[in-house]
Amino acid sequence: MKAFTRKAPVMGTEQFVRFGAAVGDFNPVHYDLTFAKQLKLPAVIGQGPLTFTLALDAVAAETGLDGIGGFKARVTAPLFPNAGLTVTCDGDGKVAVSDGETTYLTGELTPR
Amino acid sequence: MIPELKGTVLKTHKTRAHAARMADLEATLGTPSAAETARVALFFGVTIARDFDVLEKMGMVLNETLMGGHEIAWTRPFEPDEEVDVTVTLADVQDKGKNRIAVIESIFRTPGGEEIQKQYSTFVHLGGAGRGEAAA
Image (cartoon, chains in turn purple, red):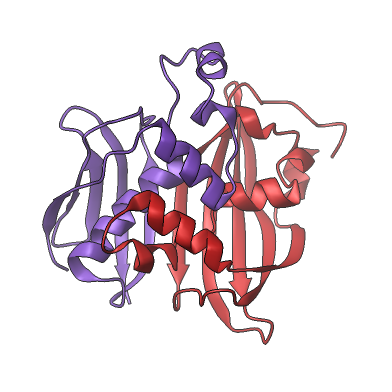
């Protein structure tokens, strides 16, 4: 599998809302700061599926998805707005999303 | 008891891989590869949960629930606007400390029975342990 390192597009609160509308996730923790603070979060957070999608999109950009049959991932940290994310993939299909300090997702690709 | 729901089919449903949703997702990502990604990552467990009230059946509150993990295995991308039959099964549910953790299997097939995609979504209901036992 092709190894790569790729910057992901920056996702702010507006993108959290738009992503929520696209996939049907209307949890207020993704757009309502008061609600987020009630959960002891410092800011709204992005959807776990958004982090998943950013990782998969980086794979699509680097290799296309025709040779991929699956992606299994664990969300390891909440994603706050405007994080500068990098997606990495090693030669064994191990994928990670991080900002250099925090790892937000780890996963593994399954070749077709 | 909630654990006795393991393995049960929570919902079967007909839906559609809406082209408009694909376009929304593509625009949100805004990358050259987004159209290809949107044809694979169009549905998530949270979408299934919201549409079908599956979490409520387990005493879980969606607004207090986060995705802990997700797995997609696909045979092909969704075609824009194609009809899909979805079968949602509770693969696992357990209380861990103060939280309730549920794994939902979602299988997407054509009306003719061809499997397009299978997902496993792990939900964590913060502080949800022990809830909803009476409703089960």
